[in-house]
Image (cartoon, rainbow, N blue to C red; front, side, top):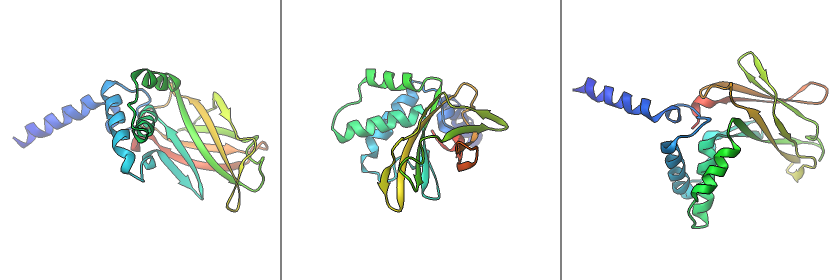
Length: 188
C-alpha cells in the first residue's frame, strides 16, 4: 500500500514538471495558475520574493523566471484589488520567452559607477554574454554611497532549468566587480 502511494506521488510530481524542483524557463497552464495563486496569497507575506533573490555583501540579484514574473504581477494586482488579466499574463510570458532576466542592485562610491559594467553568465564552463544590458547611468544616493539598479537579459535556450549559474559583473578593465551564485534548482 505504501509503495502504491509513493508511486502515485512520484507520478504526480513528474506531471507537475520542472516547477516542482527547479526554475522553469517556460510555463504551462498549471504553472500559470499556481503562480497567480501564490502571488494573490502573498499580499500578507513580507518574505515574498526571497526564493528568487540572491544577496552578497549588501548587493543582490533577483532572478525573473516566468513563474516569478506572474506571481509578482498577481501580487501587485491583488494589492489593487484587481484581477490579473489573461492578456497581461500572455504579454509577460512573451517578454520572457527564450530569455532570462536578472535584476541587479549594486552599491558604489560614485553616481556613475555602474555605467560601463559588463555582466557575464557562467553556465558550467561556458560563458553566456547578455543579449541586453541596462546599466543605470546615474545611481541614486543611498546609505554609504550610491545604489544602481541594473537589468540584464540572457538567452535561455541553452540554460537547463536546474542549472547552477554564476553571474559575474566586470569593470571596463575586465576586473571582477561582483559575483553571484544562482541555483535555478532552488527556484520556481
